[in-house]
Image (tube, chains in turn cyan, orange):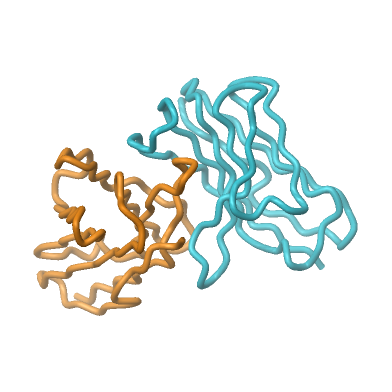
Length: 115
Length: 109
């Protein structure tokens, strides 16, 4: 089925470890996004990508790395995880040319706990 | 700058109406509305664009006042399925969405 899938759904890791969250979409949407959601903060944009090989920082990019070698995949890597990065991470995609007049479609999220 | 949503939470009986507001300190190009149920992903409801165009949900209406830099979401004859947290999002200078903190809506039978 077409859609956007994230993996893993749940992850527990330790401080200092590297962890990669995966995101895959089958719509061929040009835009993809990574958000983190913490209680009381709503959604905060980490990184976004307008197309393959084009990525840009969002509001809270520190400590994260992204890549987009193929249109359908947009992995997010925490290079050295810290407890403050414990959160729920959502990947989203949308059509569009840059102006935000298209809906964003979200994956089911990854619940990441860093001990 | 993050848009401000009000109220933070509202409790209704099934069949009652609710209004959720979203205000920005900046001029608005568009406003997005999403609903998120507990433990699930946000789901798109509606986009309101400058000039009056709307895209989205058939049973939920919204207004967009460009001069006042605010939008309101109207939930009429609420159903149990309307429960959840409602988020508005407004574009920043890079045309990416900045999200409000959410309004939690609880519908009781």
